[in-house]
Image (cartoon, rainbow over all chains, first blue to last red; front, side):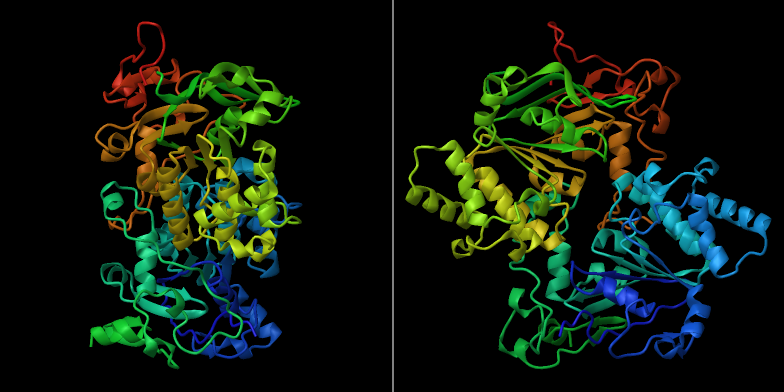
Length: 301
Length: 334
């Protein structure tokens, strides 16, 4: 049995951003898809406005889908190559019956394109004719079309060049300010996540191993994995070069039937016998800062 | 310039398509000294990979054309070498590794045989036993247990596959290794391991390296010198110290630094560069960065800028710094 996401708890307030960080295969995308019920959970609850949507029927789910949207990592494979930019953005308007009549739809598509910074002249273009940054803007316009309250952003800037990445990040933050949208921002890039989120959750092999307000996490990372992850980011300055420490050894182990105890233990520099013991739970070390580590949790108590 | 392993002078490459000429590389000068790592930085479509393919002489036949320029590698004029001569140069004097390790490995051949293949081609005198020993040695060098040599690429993780690609590239101890975004497809902790290993190998084997990347963080960690490419031109070049200290920079370089969310500095808004790179099929008459430049002057749109020397090998191709770094013989003082 492959445990993609295992016992993860979190909450996102309105108008705020939760960053979810981790390496490939840590379950962050599965988590994002599961809370939108694009993947069905084996167990657990997803409360939206206090109601458990995992028990919703298909019509009930369809009714709230307009509030819950998703932006994908690869804009090209998530856009229908046979549809024009206009048709792609208009589709959710039709599906959710947001607009009535052709004129209103035209206006709405035009205003969405303006919001995300796409020039009018592209409305009859096909996705393959545009560059990566513009394609991602189409994906964002489509997600915004139904006036969602919550968007799961699954690595929305990872496939883009840095200068374009910065444009998209600024756009997402402006939209949040204007419309009070909540984001779950999934990424492997810690510097991006610090920039956009108020709270950050670090995942390793399907589990949340540390969760803290953004500033707190970067000022005071507690879990050895979080520290290793922070140390591994190549910082664009020369002082960092001198201070380099050794890279962490090994790779993420197999998520099929994981052993009890800490899943990071095989790569951890602080590992000892007690790490193999059952149930390394999240503990609160200071206000809002949770960590799942036998070692660091205790040191701070 | 006897100490230079690689010298590129005024290299221009165009791609000929049915309806347009794509000006991919325009008058690039570059040099790499023995044992040095040069970072080649730029966005998608800046011409980084095209320049590298020109050094390897691997541009697509009949479509990619070297229009002008001279490439000298270890005293050999690459632009004049025949395909037969290139076969001996590739792998032996210069090797290249690509971004995606999965597409560079043959999925139907064991990794050990793929490493051995290079040795069989280039070191013909070697016996089976010797080659087998060299394969073990290479695998150990890149940190993979040699007993896994009979496994196929799909049995390895992304980081390990890239290590195998590096083992193949270094098997014949080339003088120059061109690494095209070698860690972009890898996770940060794995990227860290691979970069550390490449730094270590470079020192042990004395290999020179051209590291193509868009990540200025990776450059800061590994390179001695940096060349920044934009729309097929090198717009700034210098030692890492000069590029990263940030006192004098090309406006595009400043834009690149402004676009990176820095984990050390809490800036609420990023300062990206507006707009996009010009279409390489119809480049503007003046500076290629004119449209997007926050510091542009009227004259920038008319005349392409020349390199201005900032001392210590640091040059900036921008009218802001005036100047003309040409030497008496017309070559650039780079």
